[in-house]
Length: 121
Picture 1 (spheres, helix red, strand yellow):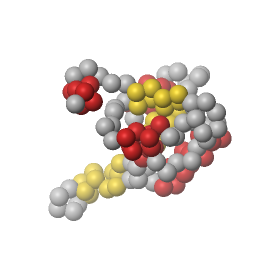
Picture 2 (cartoon, one colour):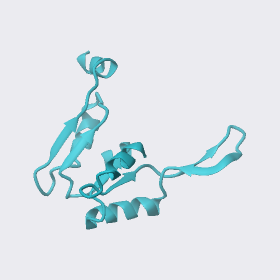
Picture 3 (cartoon, one colour):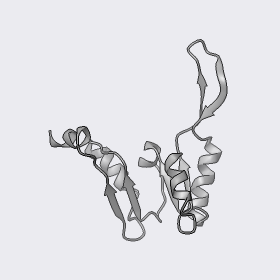
């Protein structure tokens, strides 16, 4: 949500939308839904986001790991990853979203410290 809000400040160029996993109720341990809210997106909202992206209504999808696999969006030409993974399979799934119908680019942001050390081992 925060990333989408920041990107919207440049909405003349960027038309962002979030793309996250399916909504689940925020139930407490006793099974009661205290807040009455759900997090995530419904399947219909996910489908609408993909449709809007393909149609150019939005041009930036800010995804959780749901964006790593199973999406067939040929028009992706840039992926910016805000975390890293050690698994080669997961990395291939992530970067495989770009460059399908035109040249693509992947940028991986790695912070010094714990994240950098994770890949030095």
